[in-house]
Length: 141
Ligand SMILES: [Zn+2]
Ligand SMILES: [Zn+2]
Image 1 (cartoon, rainbow, N blue to C red):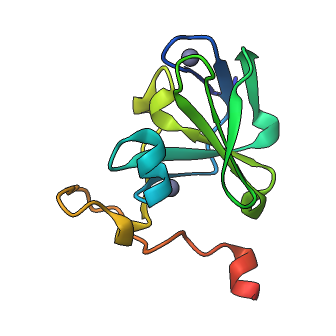
Image 2: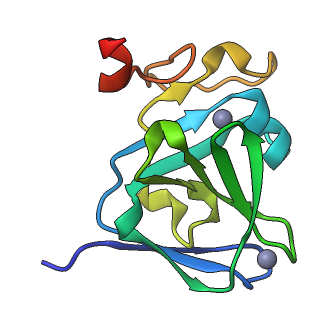
């Protein structure tokens, strides 16, 4: 069976990308940095192996929002597209709502729930984490 293809683009269409296969994880992020960058109370992410991700058109600009963190966005229209971090080297985290069919990738948890905007509520029963889910690297330290 052919692997699923998830295509996405910025608002103006100058930058287009594709991720192949199923995501490693999906999550809603409530952190302050995502909030400022998107101007929204919550950002939905899907993590893919870098080798399963590619730009199909255009070249995004990048912004270092924290040490070791690179976020990409369209230089023309400003749409935020991806997040990459040394902490998850080898992964590209896509902003799910920039996908052509965001409904296909359903979030499975909430991250940085402590930083949630007070008036924002979600009725789902997904797990809520104060920061991020501990990775195997974290448990070793
Ligand atoms: Zn654009
Ligand atoms: Zn965030």
